[in-house]
Image 1: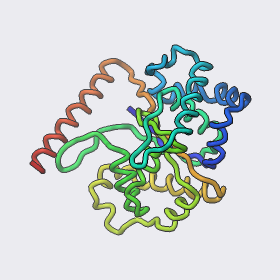
Image 2: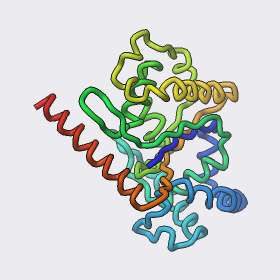
Image 3: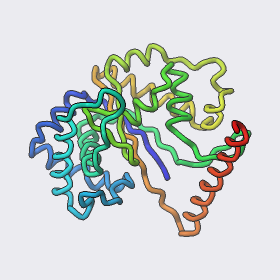
Image 4: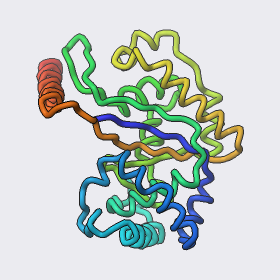
Length: 259
């Protein structure tokens, strides 16, 4: 499975207005320009949700999605923790609107491949190892992964292979002011796990933050899956077996280390 983290320069107030006002012209434009590409870019669209999923057709999905978005945005937020997950239709509509209104300023793409450390092979956890670990150390914020890939926006929250996040203008400025590579960062286990891509991914984050800062706007991110295209069933099965056995090996190493 491949994943991508997309960065958009977009005012949170603009996004809020679009989702709240639900102007017919905007809805038609979003549906016409974003829907097909979103379906091809995410596995979430392949799964029917409890309300009917793709069998409803795009117009019905948008209507249902906007209805749920309105309910979620008007609901009182819990005093602690995240709000309840919105459904798949609402998540797809939210992502489509973000893509339509936002100005793309960066993208980090990666495959959920196996990486190796001294304890064996294990699947790459991009959010924990890179966003929270490597990038968190450089920006001095170890919650960066949550902010960029799993942050509720406007009361909207979704984690099932399509999620979002973002940073306010103030947060962008604070992070850019703190950014620096710690002198020993390249010896860190998290860095070693993503070493071939670490510097390029860091540069992409910095570039995206600077672009949003220059535009004097907020940042909105999308974190979504992109399906792998295998040449044969055998290749697909081999990839799944590799990740399964790698996870088991990592689990055994963890048990041996701490228990």
